[in-house]
Amino acid sequence: MRTSPLLSGLALLGAGLLVRRWQPDLLTLPDDEDDARGHDRGIRRAARKSRDGLAGALPGNLTGSIARSLMIMGAGLILVRALDELVEDEDRLF
Image 1 (cartoon, rainbow, N blue to C red):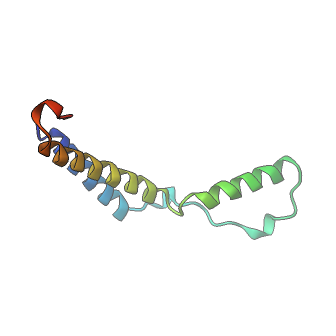
Image 2 (tube, one colour):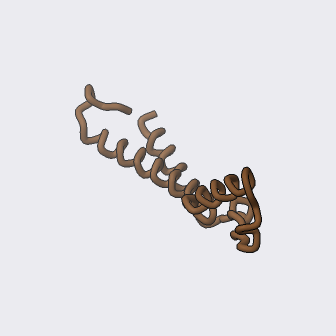
Image 3 (spheres, rainbow, N blue to C red):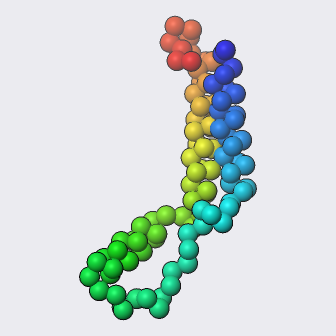
């Protein structure tokens, strides 16, 4: 089972690439509507400002973040496994 981390890394990397190509509309954030600004007060205004601040920090389509995370995890696992081959047997992690 020495190749299972390598295969898992390749699977994560492939899944990240697949998710990056497929960006469903379900995970696309809606466009901001400017006509509601200034007309709300109190709790609704605080909720709108919080929503706008959070939406500004998120990417336009959340699958981009998911895909990037999967690709980083896969590449990291492959790199750790490749470097592990260079380490002596008693110091090996995987």
